[in-house]
Each structure stands twice: as C-alpha cells, then as structure tokens.
Image 1 (cartoon, rainbow, N blue to C red):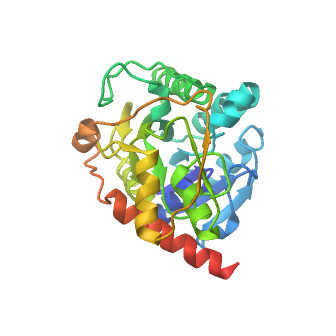
Image 2 (cartoon, rainbow, N blue to C red; image 1 turned 180 degrees about the horizontal axis):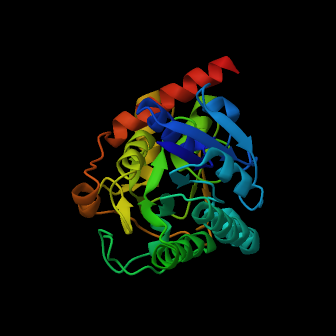
Image 3 (cartoon, rainbow, N blue to C red; image 1 turned 90 degrees about the horizontal axis):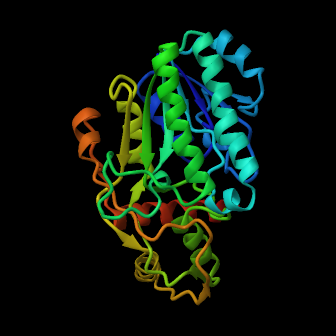
Length: 311
C-alpha cells in the first residue's frame, strides 16, 4: 500500500512510519520540520523519502498526484496546548486550514482514506471518568477545539466526497524521540531534566492526571486503522490515570536522583483529569495497549540516556 504520512518526521509520525515500513508498505513523509514540532530527518528510516513542505502549501497537491497514495496518515499539527492558548490563530491555521488543504488534495488525487491524529483534548474536563467515544466534547483549549472541528470536517468529506477516515483520539503519548525541550510531553521533559541533574517544574498541584500511552502502541493502532474503523472516532489510551507527581516519583525511583521541584500555576487550557475506556477500539480495530507505564518510562529514559551520550 502507498501511504503518505504528514508530520511523519515528528515524534509520533516517525514511529508510525516505522510500523508501516515494517509491514511492507511504501511510505512518503511530508514534514515542515518546524522547530517546535520535533520533526527531524534523523527520525526516519533511510529508505523513506522526505518532502520538506508545510501542509498549508498547495504544492502538496503535486506530491499527492505524483506519489498516488491510497491512504494519508495525517499527523502534522500544532500540538502544544500552551502555544495554542498564546496564538490561537496560528493554531487554527495549521490544525484547520492545513487539514483542509490536505483533505482537498487527498480527495482530488483519489486517496481512499485519511487516518487522523485527533486528541483526548477534545473532551476537556469531562463530568465523569473514564472518557468513552460517546463522552460529550467540551475542549478547554484552542488546540482541543481545532481537533474537534477537524473531526467534523472529516465527517463532511466522507459524506460529500466519499473520502473515508478513522480518527484516533490519543491520550498522552510518550516515548523515544519525543522532544525533551518542548512545551508538551511531561515525561520526556522530566527525563531531560533528570539526565541533566536539573530541577523540574510541576504546575498546578501536580495531582492532575492523564492517561499515558506508549508511542509504539500508538503506532500499532495506526497500522490497524489502515483497513478498519471506517468513519469512526476512537479514544486511544490504557484506562489508567497517572498524576504528574506520580511520574516524578517513578523517575526518582528509576534514577536514584531526587530532582528539585519548582512549582508553577495551572497552565491556561489544561484539563484536570483524563482516563480513556478504549473498548470500542479493542472491538473495531482489534487493538489493545501492550506497554505498561513503568516499562515505557524505563524504555524512554534509556533511549534519552543513549541519545545524550552521543551528543
């Protein structure tokens, strides 16, 4: 199968590229290599071609026409809640206008399906946990709003243009290649600080919880969605709630280093708690998360430990 991955040089997208290549698919990556997005050519397998391009560029149409993909895996995004609250216009330009550009040219070039990286941020702070696929969406950040709007556009393109989709509403994805210097991804940010023997910052009271899902589990669900989940939106998580304070203490136990803690206020747009019931993904996509959080944190720490030694 011929597959284009937008944002495929980034953290999640590059793991999806690995999974698709390992399954024997022909992969092309489009990535702007935006400095805040974490996209790097070094993340990609050597046999994968990279087109350095912004998803808002209409030249993407020529790329689709030349490569003739059957599926587009759309992972290019402005993914930071903090950046979205500071600059909601830019957030919408990438996450809405960029998406529409991809969808327009995808359907014109005969793409069968779009696999979309949505987000648990579309739910905001729900009235009850766990979050299911049917939980009402009340996003608390511009980032969550754009991801919710994107799902509606996908439904429109399926109904009016016969462009199929599967949307994956990720929990907090973590793992190797995540940017430890970014504004999203508390586990990688903390690991970077622990390795440098520097203080970590914990906002709010640290008791806010998330459902952390390992990136290789996310890559596997993207593989499953190639031929499953038509027209569906699925929460992707482990069903386990973990607080920021618990992440900190797990890293203390793993490293033997008690990093000093600096306290900060609640970040604008941050939801209080998240926990996902992925029953429908297990049924429709035949997907179950395989990596427990302590094992995933250890694997991520060991990756960054090796990465730091090579710098």
